[in-house]
Image 1 (cartoon, helix red, strand yellow):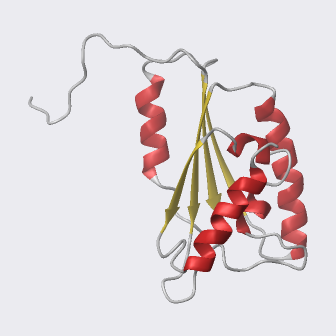
Image 2: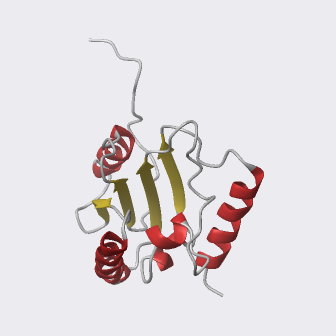
Length: 159
């Protein structure tokens, strides 16, 4: 059997514990990329040093936002207790090609998508993590949206 993929017989792997967090917007597809990263690292890690979490989120209404805020608080507390050395965060979300800039809209308290998604204490995980946005349309097509994204990340970083 031949293959285009191969693995080395020896390698050096970072010994830090790793979190792979996959946040999926309700109705979104479950991307295989986060699962592939997990499966690849799983061969080199113990169950204690690698955690894969897949969580569905929805904050389309005030009631759903309140439920997500509670869920994010529980998840953030659970994950903070583990003190991961490396954090990889995937966000799978639908963004409609003609209207869907995720970072353009804000509520009356100047909160946007990132602030809602990473509600406290989940916001602590974003700092010093690798964040991938898996979207089917534009995430930051407009300049003001890109600026809002950068400001969201700065606000989510510890002082």
